[in-house]
Amino acid sequence: QASSKHRTDCTLVAGMARSVLALLVAAHVLPRSVTGVPDASAACDAEDQSFIQRQVKAEHAVVREHRDEPDAPPTEQCDMEKDKHGCRVSHMRRGQIYDVFPGGGTACLDSSQPYYFQVVKGNPRKLLFFFEDGGFCATRVQYLSNQFCTRKPRRDTPYSGLLNQSDHRNPYRDYSIVRVSYCSGDAHGGNSTQPWGLNGEVVQLRGSVNAEAVLQWAKSQFPYLTNLVLGGYSAGSTGVQGWANRIIDQLGRRCAHISVLADSGVGHLFPIASS
Image 1 (cartoon, rainbow, N blue to C red):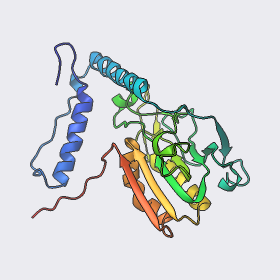
Image 2 (cartoon, rainbow, N blue to C red):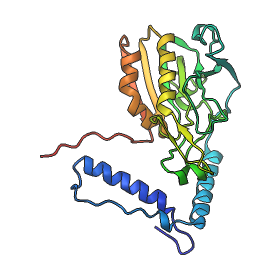
Image 3 (cartoon, rainbow, N blue to C red):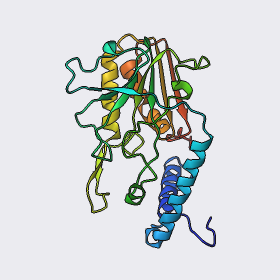
Image 4 (spheres, rainbow, N blue to C red):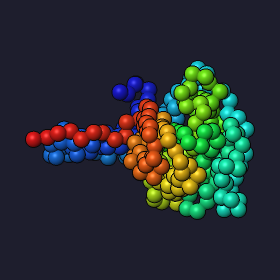
């Protein structure tokens, strides 16, 4: 809906509408004769962009004001390309957060920041493999707004909820944690380049490359798991749904207990039966 003063970002709305229609057609909920939503990008202007950015900032401010989360603790760093042991979990101190830099083809939207994931050593037979949140960028407009997706790993991310090892109510408090950081704007599923920069510079969407690097490290470090929990929030929820089968195949073959927790992001729909 549009007010008399401002309009909603038509590019974002049209793009989302086209995606939803495509899903409904593919699921046979709507006939293939549906023509979709026309490209409304020509109708968007600077006022739309300014409005949506102010709205997003206001929403983020409200969330930050009301959430009760512990501050992010200090971290230590390990570079897999420089560490002769490949950043073994056995060399890490229990309860300490480590930023692990895998190198290789991993990348963030912000090329000035190398990709890293985080590890907290706990019980070596129990693992919580968690996909971080951080929005989604499907268009150049969304990328340039700097509001729709995270461009670089966030060092201020709190360890709350099921990641909080100091909360006695948390059933996973003794688990080792592998946290898949998110800075690719693609819900942990992309592997492409796009000319989205201000002057047409190419940016990298390497979410699948990043996640695969984290998975292969975890596979080498946790060979005797009995309990495996996969989780993700928002964009991370979409990511864990897309990655669950592969991670279970790689890490969970010996596990007696496996759970998948997808929080606040339905990225994959069950097929709908048709005649």
